Length: 523
Image (cartoon, rainbow, N blue to C red; front, side, top):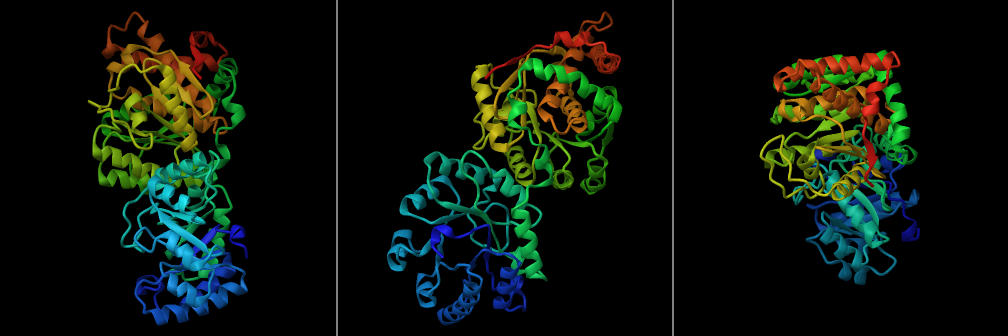
C-alpha cells in the first residue's frame, strides 16, 4: 500500500507489559483488533531484547499483511529493517527523522510524536508522514509523557498545520477511549485541518474482547457525538438582529410551556437566588452538586449549568461527571468559568473542564472569557467582577469569534455591552442596568436563564442565548425604574418580579418590553 493511502482512523499501539496485556498473546490480540477494524498497527515494546523484538515483529507483520494494514515499529529503525515492515514511529528523544528516513528510504512511513507547535514545525519541515499528537489526556501507558496538552493543545497544533498548509497526517494519542473518542474527533474538526485518526493503547490491548472493543471504537471514530446534532449552523449565525429578535417571543413561550429542567451546579451563596430566577423565567430548577445524580437528571430533557464559583478537587470531579452525563445524553451545557484568570488553580480547572467535555454556551465577563482563549490572558483579575478595562469592541469581538470557532460553541462576554458569537458574526446587546453589577450572583443567574432558553430551544442555541440575555437585562431595566426600588437591596425582589412579568406578558402577546432591545452587529 502506498504510504499516502494509509488509513490512520483507528491506530493501535501495542503494549506488552503485564499491567496492560496480562497473560494474553500479543499476536492474538492484534489479529482480533484487526478483525474489529484497526487500520494501522505500531509495535511498541520498550523492554524486550532485540531478538525478541524482531521475532515478534515478524509474526505481527505476517498478520497485518493479511489485512492490508501497515505495521510500524516504535523507535527501533534496526528492528524495522530486520522485520521488513512499512516504517517506524519515533519520539522526540529517539533517532532524528532525517537519519531514519535515510536508513529506511523514501517509501517508508516515518511518524513522529509531537506535543507543541515547535515540534510540529520541525517534524513537518523534515518530512514526517504523520504526527502522533499528545499526550491528550492522562494515561498510565506512557511513563515519560512531558505534558498533558488536552483538547486545547490538540486544536492549537491543528490550527498551525492548517495555517502553514502542511500536508502531514495526524492522530491524537493519550487516554483515548470509547468515552471520549467521538468528542475528540468532532472538536478537532474545522479550520481546514482535522484529525485523521486516533491512536489507542489500553482501550484495545487491555480489553477482554479486543475485536469488540475495536469495532466499537471504529464506529465511534466515524460517528459524531450526541451533542453535535444541535450545533449552531452557519445559516443561524448570519441572521440579522431583526430576524433573531422575531424569534425571542417564541423561545420565551417555549420555556413557559415546557418548564425545562435547569440543573445548577453552583455555590451556596447563589443557589437560592438562581432557583428563584429559574422559576421566574419559567424553568424547573434543581440545585444538585453531586455528579452521580447527573446521569438520571440528564435524561429529563433539561440543561446543565456549571458555575465554577468554588473550586475544590471534589467539586471538579463532580463537574466532570455531570458534564459527561449531559454530553452523553446530548443535552446542553452552560459553563460559567468564574474568576477563570484569577489563580493558577482556576486556570487549571478551566483547562480540565474543557478537556473533560463539550460546553454549548460559554459565559463570563471580559477577563474570564479572555482567560479561556488557548494560551490564556495576561490580565490579573481582582475578583469575579473584574475586567481589564474598555478594550475596543471590535478587538473583543474578534477574540470571542476565534474562541467560538475553536470550541464550536456560543460565547457570551458580559460587560457594559454584552457580546455574543458562535464564530461567524458578533452581536452586541446594550441592555441592562448597573444594579446587576452591585448584587452578588447576577452573572451566575444569567447562566441559569440562558440554560432555560437553550433547553427549550436546543436546535437554535444562538437565538435562545440572545433571548435569555434580553429577557434578563430588560427585566433589570424595568425593575430599576420602579418607584419602590431605591438601590441594590430593593432591586433584587423587583428584578425577580420583572423576570416573571416579562414572561407572562410575552405569553399573552404583549411585547412592549421587547421594544427596548438594543441588538446590533459588531462584526
